[in-house]
Image (cartoon, rainbow, N blue to C red; front, side, top):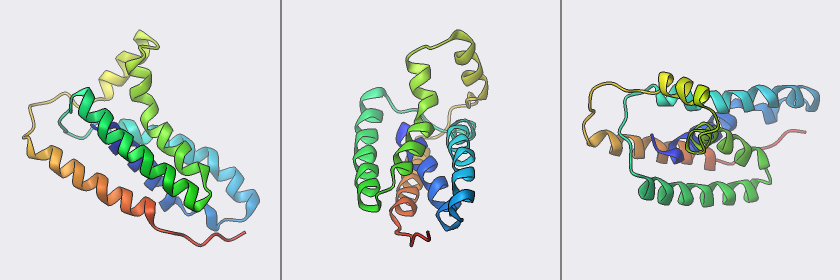
Length: 144
């Protein structure tokens, strides 16, 4: 799965959580749960049958999504958009950096490894990523 999809999904999860509508104490208590769910969303997405894109394409799309997320975070003055996106991508970063054979085994066991899926599935994933980025882009009114 594209790292950009993981980032967009985690950021959309945060935006859809509506924690900004909670009172300040409740919001501060809910933030750790949203951060944990952002990290866990990576594994849920990896379990879905998908096609892998080679590193250059994955990085190029990822950089575009990072730039877009930075723009949204700056516009909304909301660093949690970036934090959740980072946590959505972190499991792949940990895998690329080979932090631990035990972690690699866990990540692999949770990752889709079934039959070869058709090429058009990558287009479906890209369409889903665009939809997630639209969700992330929607402005919300903050209640304090």
